[in-house]
Length: 316
Image (cartoon, rainbow, N blue to C red; front, side):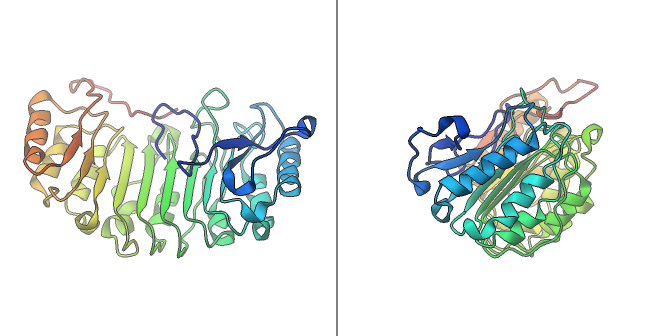
């Protein structure tokens, strides 16, 4: 999922309407069939963890969760100071009651509740181990986030939105095995907010050895976007991609030149470079290089190339 304006989630399934789990004061509200909704559990920005747990337990008590396919976890209670470990615990302890869960968006918290860099996450690896049939996992927030190396047979989409993604998380993904993963999107962010990953931390992703089904790769929102572009230009995984996103970051002429002089990218259906610092002549070169091959290139949101300080699309 990509929400560059830092807006909250739409339906993760892309089809099912989002339905808030009713509180104790909404007993009379008519609920849809369990499989006909993306269920959302979350409290107000200043709510507490007890209220979140109460809502979660109401969910598993009032809804036939054996038929629930999509779930959104919103604010677990003062998420700007309290981490997500209790929300992880509740989900994993009730995993047997959610056997049909295929889509999970963890951290649907708008900027009005907590800026993306303020969201306090935790170790989300148990979400993958507890739900072996999960197909889509989207996580928002990088502060305190942990994702250890894991093997997951059925995950098809993994997205992490952050203003600063820790190197340990990137290495954890890089060292994981996802035979079914088709889409991987990482907002890497900036060092000021904990985004300390280097190209070396992405080695397993760029090799693609443990990602045989990957068709979309997004390494985005990075202050080292030129270095990433240079690495992607010779990365083995690129040959099997259909779409590539190096957008939202500080990409300049150096990175664009690397893409043009590296391995052919003309097999791609789409190359997303929006929010960039390319000069006009370089942008024209990029467009021309792909136009004859029918590759859709997004070069929107051009920033001033001569800016001394280049900012990414999403940081704080």
